[in-house]
Every structure is written in structure tokens, then in C-alpha cells.
Amino acid sequence: MNGEGCNCTFELIFWITKIMLRINLLIILIFFNLSVLSDDQIEYRKKGKYRLISNTHLIDDISYKKEGDYQIVVEIPTGSRRKWEVNHKSGQLEWEFKNEKPRKVKFLGYPGNYGFIPQTISGDGDPLDIIVLSESVKRGDILKVKVIGMLKLIDEGDKDNKVIAVTGRGAFKKIDTLKELLIKKPNVIPIIKLWFEGYKSPGKIIFVGYENKNKTIEYIEAAHENWE
Image 1 (cartoon, rainbow, N blue to C red):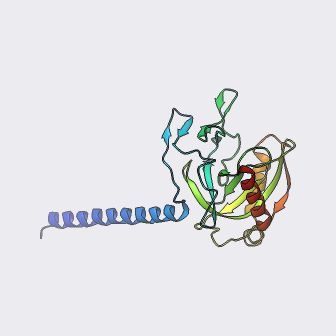
Image 2: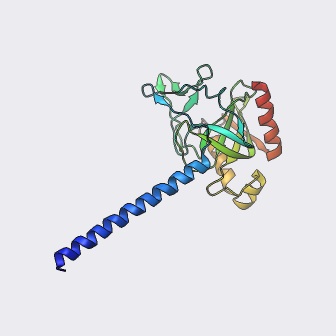
Image 3: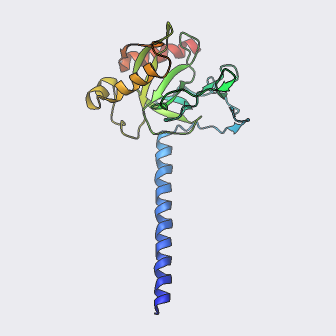
């Protein structure tokens, strides 16, 4: 075989190997997403730049719990500063406006996937806020999560508690309680606490304390009863 033929053979083997590696990586990513995402995924269509529309009312039509796991609708993916939220009447996701402009938090991006637990109503009439300590997913994704505790906050005089959860994949998959996370990874929760205390103007958000897993689950179940 001449030199030109050898070069062609080696080049073909190189490209076949590269393609196979990409296919394997894609399979791994698909498996990861299926293990974290709920089976209740829904399809959205964009309506302009500021709305995601579906045929599902995201608060009322998605189960708050499935097969023992709580579910969350993601409004703001990990790392994003864009302040999206669910519209209570339409049940659709919208980019929040402030001073006639789409709002971005003037701070670091969110330190986890932030959203709400469907079929719940808190004391202020909103679905329960929740932050999931996991890799970034898409806005509108529905995650099945393990609740581990809660951050108790006051926002301008009103309760603004944040449920804390993890997924079955990632760095915290073996963590079961907030206490366990504080012991094994002592810097994680202080980061979350400092973020919520700092993303608005100084003094607006006041830290009250932590809530354990059992009390947090009672809090969620009570909020679900309020919704019913």
C-alpha cells in the first residue's frame, strides 16, 4: 500500500472514532436528562421574546408529587439572571418586566435551578418557591427532586421561604437532609444564603433560619392543601 493510501485509511479511522465518541457522549447526556427530568415534560412554543406558551396550566395541571418525589417547574435555570416567572392566571411562563424592561437580577446568576412546586399555594398566594442544587436545565423543564430542607427568609416584611432540593444525579445525589449537607459540604448552604441575602438591595432580604426536612415536607403538604 502506498503512502497516500495509508493516510486515507488512517484519516477514515480517525473520523469514524470521532463520530463514535460523539454518539456515546450523546447517549450519556440523554440518559442523564431522562434520570433527572420528570415524565411529565410538556412542549412549549415561543410567543415573542417574553412568553413560553403551552396547553398546560403549569400551576394547576402538573402534579406536585409523583411516585414519592416532589416536582418542580423551572422558571430560571442555574446560572441565569433572567427573571422569568409563572403567570398565575394563564399558568404560562413569562419574562418579568420592571420599569417597562425585561428584568435581569443585578447580581450573580442563580446558584441553582429556581422555580416553583405546582399545585401549592403559600401564605402570599404564590406557589412555593424552590431551588434545586443541580446542573442547569432548560426553562420550563419539570424536575423530580428530593427535598432536604428550607431557607427561611423575610422579604420587605413578608415571608419568602425557599425550599431546597437535590436531584437523583449530580454532586449531591446522596444527600438526604439539610443537616447532612451542612456537615458534608459545609460551604454550599452559606453560598445559597448569601446569594438570596445579596441579590436585592442591602437589607431587603433578611435571613431567619433553616428548616429541617420533615418540617419542610409538612410545609409543602400544607401548601398543597391550600391549593386544593
